[in-house]
Image 1 (cartoon, one colour):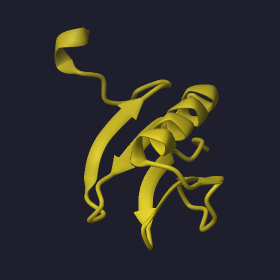
Image 2 (image 1 turned 120 degrees about the vertical axis):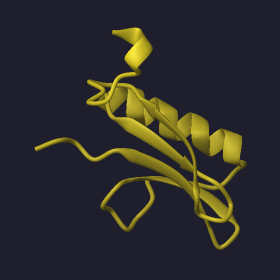
Image 3 (image 1 turned 90 degrees about the horizontal axis):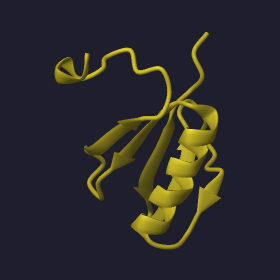
Length: 76
């Protein structure tokens, strides 16, 4: 079974990072950039995808730090 990815999101005015599927954040507070750094570090350590959500909840960016199942076509 694949490891869950990491997501950075805003909830009630607070930026948080959590493993997807968990209801509890492993890191909270600070700016969006600070939480992105926390989420990126965890995703690199776990070798999984990091999803960064915008303030409205839409996906702003996705970065893969592991075995990417969908690599860019120009990087083959």
